[in-house]
Image (cartoon, rainbow, N blue to C red; front, side, top):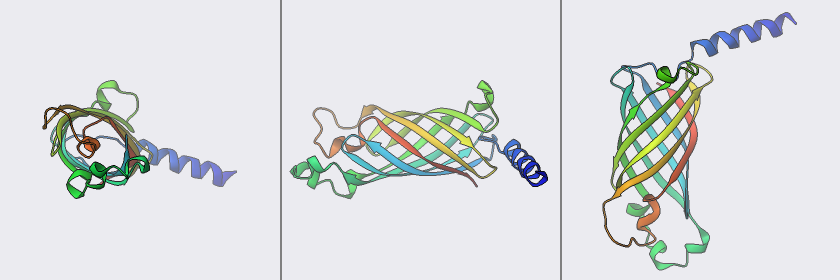
Length: 170
């Protein structure tokens, strides 16, 4: 019983010290899965705190798999690297300390400017320890760079997406 109480005490102190966003000079690295219509892939992002509630960063997604129903479509077969890859500069408003749910929790709406579109995202992080947490992001394009009808391959990064994965303090 003593060992259990000691372990519980240590874990509670490590959770108290965890913080989802620390402000200026905060560094976050995230890696996770990307889910979207007709494809799934991997998403990585890095955010750097430039103020108490502001961070900037970079995010990239590469689609590893494309829906089997579309693989016979010549437009999807032509979805080479440039259609499967996207990279974005991003701006976040980190609101964890504003909504004050928990020091380990952060909500961050933001804007992104990428190779395929100008868009927005809404993300949330929860840190279990000082260095490890989980995140999720919802992404939506506001303005696509190509007007008119997009080919199936061009729609791969021009739609609503969800990212889920691990977040790390650097």
